[in-house]
Amino acid sequence: MWLACGRARRLSAAKSTALSPRCIAPARCKRLLNDGCNTAILHGMTHIGIDARLTAYRPGGISTYTRRLIEALSQTDHDNRYTILQSRKATSAITARLPERHLWTPPHHRWERVALSIEISRFKLDVFHSTDFIPARWGARRQVITVHDLAFLLLPEHKDRAASRYYNDQIAWAVARADHILSVSEATRDDLMRLLDVPAHKITVQPHGVEPRFFDAAEDVAVDGLPPVYLLYVGTLEPRKNIDTLLSAYQRLTAPPPLVLAGRIGWLFDATLHRIKALQADGHAIIHRDDITDAQLPALYRGAAALLLPSHYEGFGLTALEGMACGVPVIAGDTSSLPEVVGDGGLLLPPDDVSDWVDGIRQALDDSGWRAAVIERGLRRARQFTWANSAQIARSVYENIS
Image 1 (cartoon, rainbow, N blue to C red):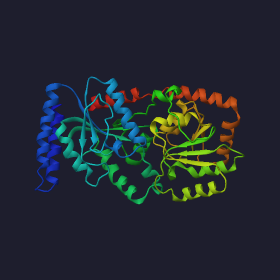
Image 2 (image 1 turned 135 degrees about the horizontal axis):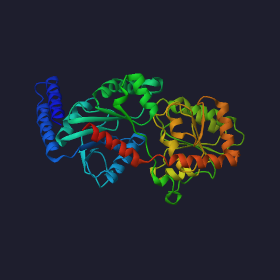
Image 3 (image 1 turned 180 degrees about the horizontal axis):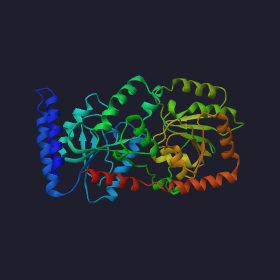
Image 4 (image 1 turned 90 degrees about the vertical axis):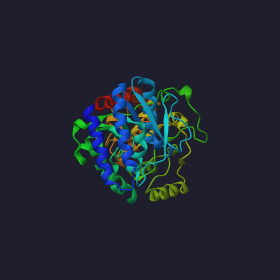
């Protein structure tokens, strides 16, 4: 403990000399760090701050991970102290069980590392957990980051230039600065080791969970305006999701049900969007829905004849897990993390083999015996993933490094 406090003081002092002489914040942060060390020693309780700012800005996988992790920790860990670090723009609390403190620093801001460090210093944290992989420069005794994927390194052509530059500038510093890294899958862990030379002992795999509501149709919130039978894709519409293979396979099917693409339009999708509009004009029943709420997701999944995920790359693949929990046949790409999530609970296909996708979709539509078997296996597989287990993994990391 005393060694950790000394390390925090040295880190704060080093940062102070790096800033303008007119900036008095680092000196104040140093005093707060010293107080934080003394508080931890006196009370013997680990104080963990979890960065939840992104939940106020952007829906999607990282926001879902952050919310569910916080909810699960609030229900299962009563031995540690938590402070949820939320954006000042947040309109509601993630959970009433844990205190929230509102920060001015927006995520992905040019000066985020320094501004965030100054803001969190006053909370006297033993552990700061950045759920979006970018740690603070200082302000807590230990820092944990979650790395969700390394798509910006593996598929740079699928990001716009500004986004690629931002993430590339951050990642090497982030993994070096962090005291420990949570990886959402074995595939992402392997990418960290291979691409960034992160030692294995510094990484803990922390799979996502699936909420109980996805197993229980009684809680479903109906989605209006959907056909009685449809094929389904759920996720951001962007190049790495490989929607073009899905469109090519759909074109080759004979009298298929409508194809529902549920998700917001992401970056570099203009060409595929133009293709979708051309297919719609040509009579293909392709429906884009960007208005599905989180509460409506289970009903959306459950009404589908099959969930189709031909992605080139996923850090985890939560959509596949949710689909299996809803009792829907899942057909997914056999790349990155998807095999370790889907396992034998769905059909895994090469993401660019259009013929295989045509055959797989036909099987899902026409072979009732296959459907029943894969649905049963998918439900069994999905039950292996819980947010309580994910929270326990995070808690163990917090306690082991503090």
